[in-house]
Image (cartoon, rainbow, N blue to C red; front, side, top):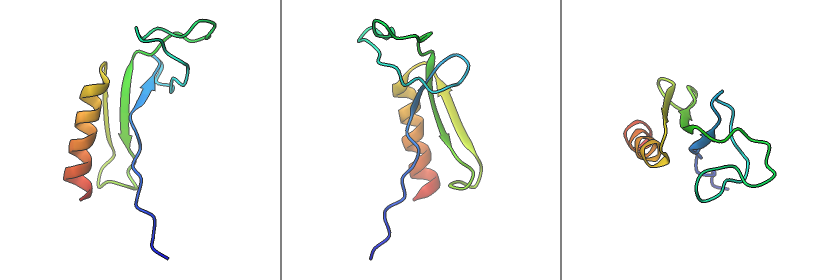
Length: 79
């Protein structure tokens, strides 16, 4: 049986304190009605040290930038 391909961590939406935001968010970026959430403040990608030569983390306010840096890191460090 073939090994499953290695999965890398995804970009996470985070609160100001760094905790992952799993709440429903409206199209304007605010928490959905009835959600007890302070609202997301940015995005984070963390590559754990067991998957990299060095631990790697990027934080930014926009998902597009974090996803771009994630793809670059994975291409240059893992393949």
